[in-house]
Length: 102
Image (cartoon, rainbow, N blue to C red):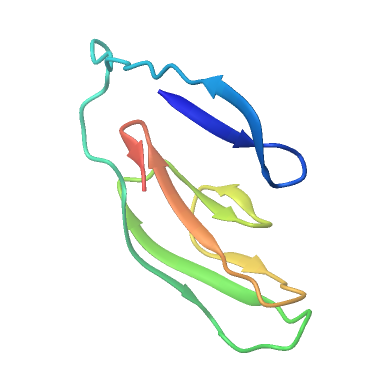
């Protein structure tokens, strides 16, 4: 398999680089078996605010050990979390346990 890579100027270079794909076989010997967390809802106390106004992010989820709210908040153990966005911001919620991440 050959792949022509662009140079720093954004145009394709004359150089051709060899790409060797490797097929990896998943190892499942010690993989824990169970139910991954699920998120039923993720809401904001207000969806239209002035810059610097606090907003409470709340969620309903099951089977999670902890949650990651990004950007700004990071890992938390439970709902809710308060943010103070300075501009339009999209928040992402991930629920995590030993069996997976949603």
